[in-house]
Amino acid sequence: MDDQIQYSPKQILIFEGVMNLLQEGRPIHELKVAEIAEASGMGKSTAYEYFSSKEEIIREALAYHMRENFRRMVQFIFEAKTFEDILMNALDYLEESLEKRFTGIFLLMLSEHQGKTDKGHYMDPLMKSKIDQVTLKELDKVLLIGKREGSISEEITLDDLKMIVLGFFSAYVHELLPLKSIHCGVERNEKPENPDEEIKSLKRRTVRLMLKTLF
Image (tube, rainbow, N blue to C red; front, side):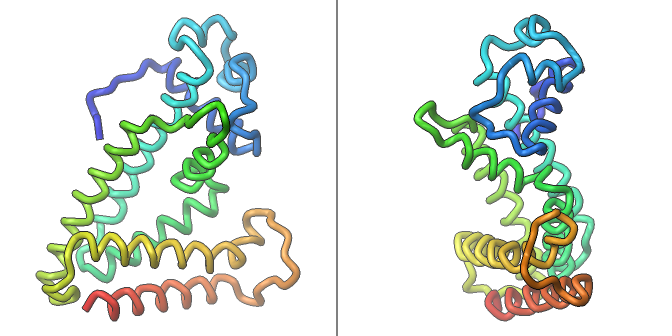
């Protein structure tokens, strides 16, 4: 993504203020500049020194956190040396994001969903396009590693890999949510007896099925 964008310390504080409010469960379209400024530890007039509107503040905040989150995710995933470990690192990262109450990609996805009102989208379409481009670039690296190791069939294309990986990740998160509910404060009728072991088993099963599908 565009690493040349530079923000001032106060702008970053404003971005953190937006994300803190979203973490508290505030609907994105109901946020006001005054409360964003307060959550950032500054006055409303200071916020307007850097941004012309609430919509601009939220768009820039989401774009900033998306870039930072994606950068950290890629760095963490590629600390692995093998294709299987790359998949496991990706699942670990998804779990960590969920455990932090949607502070990462989950919060951004939730925020975009909340922002789909008659007032328009808060996520910058250009940023979405850049995210898609960088995602494909990183997946291409994964594809090469997998094929070099013999873990991915030569017939698998980049588009195939994207569909398979994103599909399995989505299914993994769906299965992970109830297991993490005791950490996220979500009420459920039946709590898992040993959530940590169930999560480990879910990860192993997800990786095993992904490897089977890709080969």
